[in-house]
Length: 82
Image (cartoon, one colour):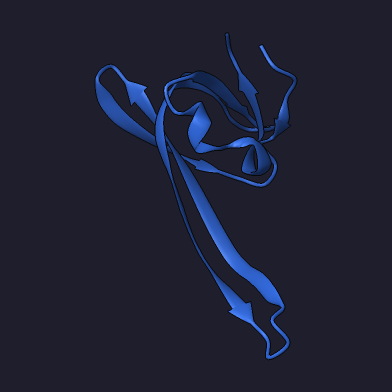
């Protein structure tokens, strides 16, 4: 198992197909990551500065052959299992 890292930083396409754990003070989910969805928007100024205004991330796990979508929050950590 890897050292826990902030989930919003560690969640990448390379993890699809791996077993991961998402953990916060109120949630712990372990399972096979089958995908994730990122949605949000940014703003840009005339000088080219881009600011992320809002973002939401949902991790999709396999649950007995069905999809299980779990919101990823800023307080979650992510661990990858071997």
